[in-house]
Image (cartoon, rainbow, N blue to C red; front, side, top):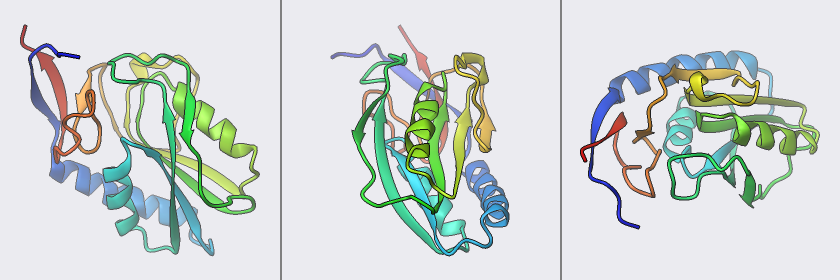
Length: 179
């Protein structure tokens, strides 16, 4: 599918992201300080860069697992129909779990995933999102930790894509169409 030409304007620098992750990791270590192992669940694909940087900052025993949920396809708008495309490999019953999301937009995906994982009876289930876009919220939901609150802009970079492009940018950028 051909896309309209666009440019990317930096919204959040790589340095700002790194500093915020250090702060978030300190808060998470406090919350999960007594855990024997924290299961960090990354929501694919957008969270993979965030989860890698976050777990390196956590001075806790961690296990990393992934769940893939989709509500976007290749478009810029959520379909609001959340599908689980890849489930966890490990068990989470009785374990401490941190769900890592790239961006909370409408809230449908994170709401669906936390409900879904909650049926598996984790000891503690918390959520973290790198970005929060509250202006688009349709489900009353807030992550336990948020990196940055952003305006209602379409963003890419740091793992977040536009039709599978721009995930490799080291910063968060705003997509601006040129035509």
